[in-house]
Image (cartoon, rainbow, N blue to C red; front, side):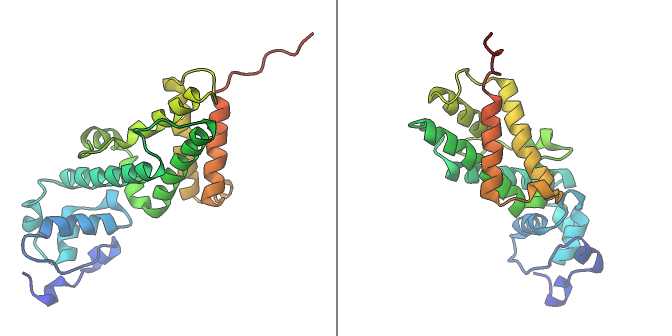
Length: 223
């Protein structure tokens, strides 16, 4: 274990928000992950910065992660697990909705869960859905749980099965719904005034407009 004096974070480590902490021998891997998850700019981290903040050599960090990319892949996997846990708390994907009211409630709860996650963990959310998101999604297979990406299609199918919308949802419906929810989170993170509503209200607005988008346009007025 390094001496207490060596655990003081360097100036560069403080600058990226990495805080030094003690850890037991053999727990360096978890300490590196914890430090990365606590950083305000996860995408900009390096293993060298994390090692310095923890008072160990870069070589010690590289014994646990072969590269910065390997570390970020594991951090993103943790993020997708956390997001899926929020979705699982929103509704039981294994059980279909009982009626139209529950189907609508599920979509709103899903939107709320996603917005709340982006609010609570903005750096992790940016990492998961940033420039390297395709690679992170491909390697973020959940462990003994459903994938976070299964929930939105399930919520949309529930709207159809309970008669809220007449047409079964297709890939374009899912794309629009995802764009609406994710876009609201991005605008909220960017402090756009219209997105600074209370979470319940914003989630309800987004879910309502997604539902409307799945209905056919009204026909021409009667002659």
